[in-house]
Image 1 (cartoon, rainbow, N blue to C red):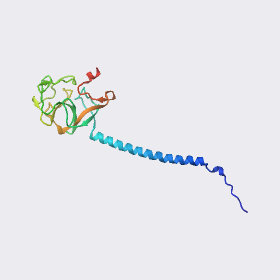
Image 2 (cartoon, helix red, strand yellow):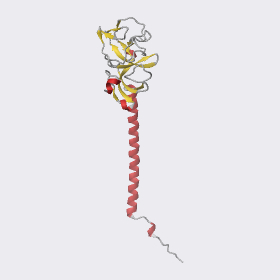
Image 3 (spheres, helix red, strand yellow):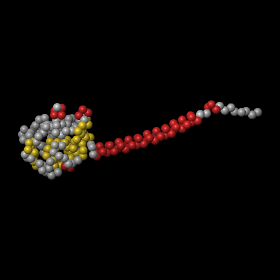
Image 4 (cartoon, rainbow, N blue to C red):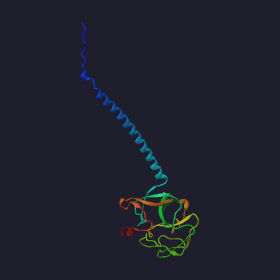
Length: 207
């Protein structure tokens, strides 16, 4: 006796269902491909950003009060790597395995003099310093005038009474080879975010 097997055609997917499944598979494969490509691009961009930040635009956190009121403790700044600096710029230099930030007061060829009241003279001309709040001779054990030699800088902190800088024989003139770069941008705190004005203190900025 022969038996016929009944086939239930209702269990087979329709052509529309098959087409939809194929489209979903293609979309899934395309999505994974795009995601993989995007992640690879992000990794490359991140690596380039880290490389640039390390080699050209290091980020530093301020420690201490020697640069107040221009730069304050725990603020975060960005610097540009260079050894060519101008008078008045804020520079970062290496000193005893540390990075210090001070202001360029004298460049090669300058003659620097500071009197007992803390007034600074560059080439016999009184230096206009709107970035400081008070004057002080500070930690000073050198004789004036000081003649800035080639490839060297005379540096001072803006908070003259607390800063240890070129007024001290322990630091002296800073060799250009010690210079890491110049400070130009503040990224923290957010309310002070922006380019640093070398010629103003916080009081004048708030006016």
